[in-house]
Structures are given as structure tokens and as C-alpha cells.
Picture 1 (cartoon, rainbow, N blue to C red):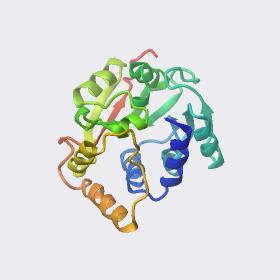
Picture 2 (spheres, helix red, strand yellow):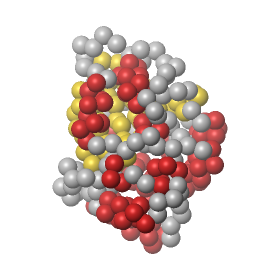
Picture 3 (cartoon, rainbow, N blue to C red):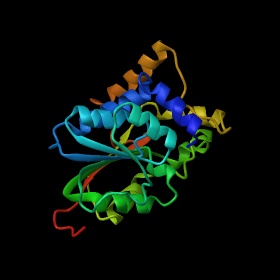
Picture 4 (cartoon, rainbow, N blue to C red):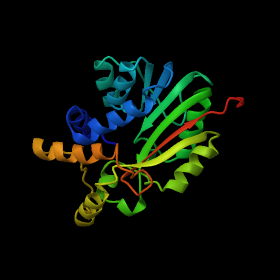
Amino acid sequence: MQEEEIARSAALEQRHWWYAERRELVRRTVAGWPVGRALDIGCGSGGNARVLAGLGWRVTGVEHSPEACRIAASRGLAVVRGDGTRLPLRDASMDLVLSTDVWEHIDDDAAVAAETARVLRPGGRALIAVPAGTALWGGHDVALGHFRRYEREGLAALVRGAGLEIDDLWSWNVLLRPVVRARRRRRTAPESEMEKVSPALNAGLRAAVMAERVLPLRRLPGVSLVVTAHKPRGARR
């Protein structure tokens, strides 16, 4: 992702409905898990890492972009510049590995999955979110430097292939999928969809995603896929 896009995303994330609900997804998923050491791979400007810190986790971010590192550090996050496929951390040193909307930016996603498993202690958990559905591929993906979007079966195989056991795998942002698909059919030029929206529209879009907390939609196609997994306690690495 270009540095200009990273700076723009950092400016948007405090109020934008998508970032706000992604932070809430992290909070609701992790709340109740025993706290310890957490790693946020591709932490960006640190929004999700700050959620973990607020829940009591000792968080380190790894980020490839110099601009994102600078912003995250300015917000008080312990961040290391590094590559998700070669994490600068010891084996079995983390209780939680978080990575939201990062794997699609990495050509060798099997390597980042393997590194996630390597740095997790036996019994440690992973929380991964990725964009879903090859049918939704469009100019937005090109503009953000995505290599792919994921289908449920492929993501499950990738996580299991790294040696992790899946606890849950579900769709997120289901209600807005038809809107996203229609928009991408109209707008094919490489252009990010992360842009300012009016307060009223922002509230409406956030309400649509919030409704999924109580509606039985998790097994239907969505805009994103989310997986929770753990490293088996008998694993050697």
C-alpha cells in the first residue's frame, strides 16, 4: 500500500464506520480471552493494537511501512519495522497474534501464516481478518495493492496448513455485500473506497454492520472473512 494511502487511512480511522466496526469486531472477539503478550502483524497506524492494549494486552506491532510505523509510534504503540513473512520474534513468544486486512497484501501468504504459527506459544490464539470473495475483486483491491481476495475453503486450508486448529470461521459485513458488489461493477478504475462520508451515511453504514451482531448471518457470503484459531498444545514450535 502506498504511503499516501496509509496516511489517508490513518486520518479516516477514528470516525469512519468501517474502521470503527473492525475495532469493535476485535474487541468483542478477544474480550474474555486471558491476556498476555500480543502481536499485531501489519498494525498500520495502530487502531486495533490500541484496542488490545485497552483490554490489558502487552502489544507489539510489526509494520512494513515507514509511514505507518511513524504514525503508530506517535500514538504510543511499541512498533517494529519488519516483514510479516520473516517476523523478528522468537519462537513461541506470543499469546495472541492479530492480523486484520494484511494477508491479502502479501504475495506469499503461506509464509505469513507459518510465521503466525511459529511465534505463537502452544495454546496461543490467532485472530485473522481478510477480504472475501473473488467476485468482489475490483479497482479498490488494485489501488490498495491486494494480491487476492479469499474464499472460505481456501482460507481454512491456509490456516490449517500452517499447523493451526480453527476454532471459528465466519463472514463479516454481510448486509452490505450487495452494495459493494454493485459499486465495484460501476467503478472499475484503481481507486480506494476508503473515503470520507457524511455523518448521516456513516451512522447508517455502521448501523448495518452492527446489526450483524444479533442476526444469524455469519455463514452467508460477506465482504470479509474472519477466523479464530489456536496452536495445538503439543506443537513443537
